[in-house]
Length: 109
Ligand code: SF4
Image: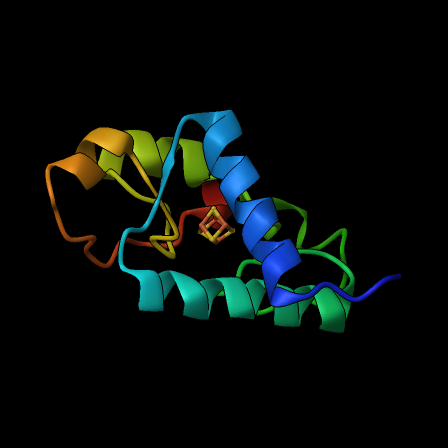
């Protein structure tokens, strides 16, 4: 498994956002920290475990929290952003709203 650099991981996050019609969090420092977390998780576990969650021990157990995680679509639709607030609903982002803390709904998916 090839390690991923920060730039490769940023490209991944940007492609996810583009494909899903989401916006990356415009707070550049915040987004940088999350992307660094994703790269660290890739290099540690071999997959993009959510940077805001702990592993349950295997890729199979973590399947619902590999980025973009299973709850992210509904969280973005209903709350304006994913659990980590890496991805935002574009309308939420352009309104200049600030992401709030939201519950981790991984067990519901
Ligand atoms: S909450 Fe989901 S979509 Fe957001 S960074 Fe974590 S895994 Fe990715």
